[in-house]
Image (cartoon, rainbow, N blue to C red; front, side, top):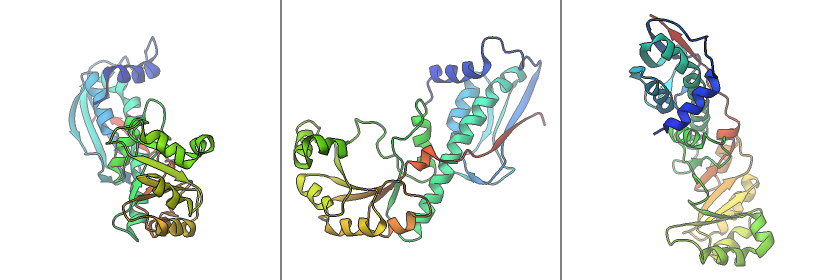
Length: 269
């Protein structure tokens, strides 16, 4: 659910203090139309914008649906002034989220070329204020959210290890987490993955390693330790990493580099 305060901020940013442009009389209908193929996402937010403006939703696609250019994904009806006021926020949010969903689906499809099990996950490299929308877009594309925030899992990174050493860092956080909170350790050498598992890591993240080096690291892990690959992995490189035996491939580019899917908003019949 999108909070009213967030919708108000979106609308205020676009409308300003004296919106004359949208002072249009009467009622009208509006259609959100895809201008290119992709995977739709963000419609929950678009619907929330129009509903906040008392514009009725006549028809809507489900997030995660594959769409083609020319396809209508959302239809609304209401006062022309309010339909037009909601247009830009709805178009921008849906386009941004659909771009993320489309890129995620491309990565998932690439992974399935070699593995039915490896998960494609996002990261915390999200736009401030839009993390919820962006994470839901990843799910719409068939991906995994990974951590939604820092409270969901402890990740022992290079800075922690530099300050405390790997064994001490893992022990430090084991003393502070709930039994339900997993600990992941980031390593940059294949052989350090085994060390991390022996120190108590639930998940080992092989960061910025080649597929070959990642595979060597995975082979050294105990069977009950999950393996993740990350670090500048492109969609094109996904099959090679999926073939290493990792359980998860996390990609910051799902959110920080996804191209917006192009939509237009058309009023009237």
